[in-house]
Image (tube, rainbow, N blue to C red; front, side, top):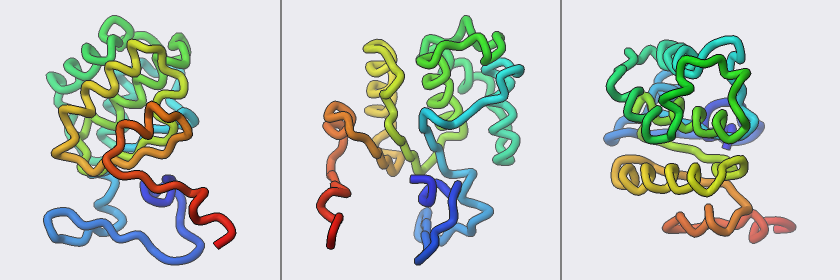
Length: 164
């Protein structure tokens, strides 16, 4: 997942991403990628909103406040968006990761163990928004949770490729 999202370099081979039949350069890819994993960290002294705006600017994307407000509302973090992230629970931080990943309207969305710290409401919020986005995004999920895997149209098991 880290290699696909551009966070780690492959030791062998390469990753090619295309959008509208055009190959994306490595420097362009971040604009089109959303990545969520429970180990991704935020700046704890910044508020949730400040973290999201910072990440958008790092991607050279102008923050659309109406879009951000919709995402904060959808993930039930509207009241917490002005609070420092250090005050967030692990489930709130995971929902903030989804806001961060979706804020730039990515074309590629990589989810690594997406529901690991979410309660039932957080899981429902996640799958409802992903249902809306499925036709506009390439969605790749890495998970051991059968409920996460059940959201996929096609599956690939790493176990099938071990010892090959």
